[in-house]
Amino acid sequence: MSTTMQVLSNTANGNKEKSVYYTIRVATKIVDYSHIYPAQTKDLTTYHDDEFVKHLMGPRTFLDKNFNKIDKAETDLTNVVIEENDLDEKYGLTFDCYPFPSLDLYVQLTAASSINAARKIVQQVKETNDQIIAVNWYGGRHHCHKSHAAGFCYVNDVVLSINILRKNLGSVFYLDLDLHHGDGVENAFKFSKKVATCSIHRYDIGFYPGTGSLKSSRENTYNIPTEKGLNDSSMLWIIKEIVAPLISNFGPRAIVIQCGCDGLALDTHKEWNMTIKGYRDSIDWILSHFSEIPIMLLGGGGYSHTETAKCWTYLTGSVLGVSDIDTWDILPEHKNLDAYEKDGFRFWTDHNSGPSKMKDHNSVEYLNDIKTHLLSL
Image (cartoon, rainbow, N blue to C red; front, side, top):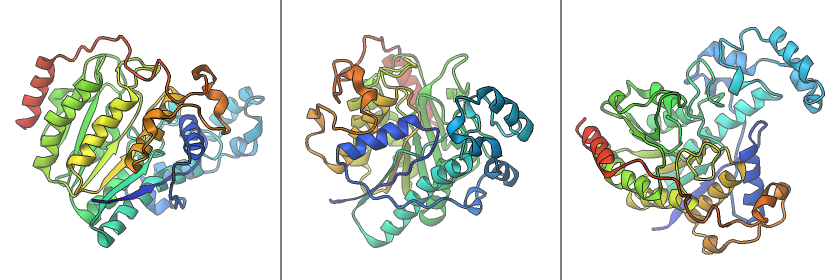
């Protein structure tokens, strides 16, 4: 069966790992089809609160006018932000969701990237019987809530895109592979019978966002809280033994996968022990075993920007059937090449070619207990 492939992209401020990914993808000559138009207020308010959207889209005169002077004006910037935006704290625009220049355009483009991917899927379903895979690494902002930003997520493009798929195709299964619990998406659909959410994440005292326990799971809301050190084989076991039966039982008309890369062994969190090829193996298994269902792949977290860029580039190449991805070596010239100096300007290194020595604390007994609980709901 052939594959209808759409790689959707945009550029926006405040996304270093996305920027690095974009340039490495262009440099490696991976083909993409980009049709991105900024989302309108009416698109955002299909889920988000009207006043929240109004505040996000409101003018930030000082920030926008001083875009090129931010470093020099850091002290003044702090004072002006407080004076101009008294409601920032109410809407979560503080700490990890601080305002930045052209925030309104960033929100519009981030939302639009996933909205347009969903619309493209709906269109393709009507036009082809081929497998449909939409790829948008700029999406996946799973922490944003209906009326406030959170966890570096200013808009929940995931929810906006799922709503389009749900309304046009029917039931949707959402799988979250990010290191952090997909709380924003879960909350949006916790009372829905047409959307099932499943989040595989690190869960521990003090670990953000502090939600996603096994006990919080119920029908169509499945949480797989993992211990430290989750590796490739454990992730693939979870996909085969837990996620696949959940998908089959739910019978979705579309699948959305959030592919955060903060579980990589080289990520600064150092909580999981996943490799680039391990992510590929798990995602590829889903793509091959549910090939009759349209699937959207979204981005997400990733705090080692270069490794995240490599992972998404590798995943894109894998989905497109690029034959030499396992032998990629010297990175082609591109504007962010200097970021890879520590890697010797190579795609594969001794560090990212395999897992670290971190122990996997997710025992077979522990994972089987999760399986038994979730499949009994």
